[in-house]
Image 1 (cartoon, rainbow, N blue to C red):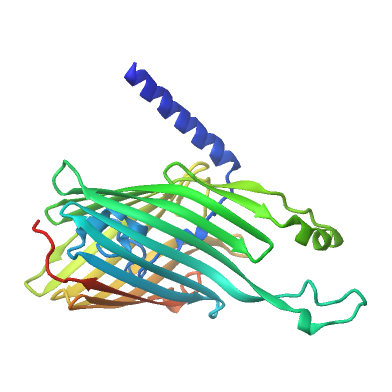
Image 2 (cartoon, rainbow, N blue to C red):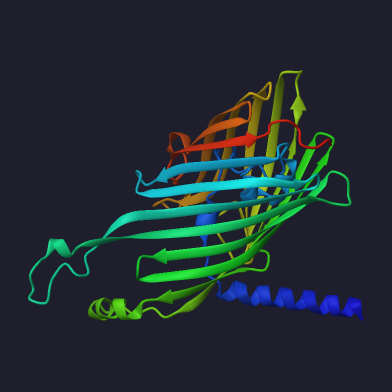
Length: 362
């Protein structure tokens, strides 16, 4: 009976995901697909099997258990579209005991100080610049993370509880909720990682200020939006890497990762009507665990030209890092030479470890 109950549950989950895939919009909550941490972005996101700092909450929550300190805080800042959009991350982790770590973090992507000209013209037809106000369009994600060792040696497991807040001034807002599940495994110098993001699908409940929007939408012949539910389909991140130790001073770490989405066909190297797979590759050269040089390639896409041919576009990334007495400073420059259709950006991240001594023995 227990087996039959589990089988029925699995069938129901698969059926529900199939239905959701048909009604879910692509690119829902896409601000959570950008990534956090200059190290990770310099490597193109190929860190699923190796991430071991506060940015683990995003890439692989199980990696939190690799932290060798009692507490770590970190932050990241980047800007897009000539500084119009701001993308920020802040988080803190705390080791609960020898086998478990908890963390809280926040991600924000937003555009601020947008002029609101709805009241520019008064009831007498006069232009009144003093009636112009401003508003922000911003997306927030609050992550509550946990990681722990497992009964299997060198296997860590973890996950996130995600609270999503999205707002467009007084015009619209949404609340969302979802889960992530992750694992990380080490075998000698091999590193393996998996992160099932939005494991049960993430749901955003949208509410529109119809009274505020009605007059403008009707005057322009547009349909007034109605309150509704937005579904973010699951995606899985897989990574595998190997650490080469050249001598006591130099290390080389390459990693390959696969980002698999389940919301239908996307413009990726591998795609079907159900799933799309975006491969990424990263490389990190380390000196004495002090200075790091990084590079990565990501965002492979076929771009159609006017002559009906297609050009392969890809995004190169580079970066450097410094790890000194618990202070980590990382920098990344994405889309070098404008090789990709994506815009380039300077990314800075900073983290600090409180109590740099080993908190527990492995």
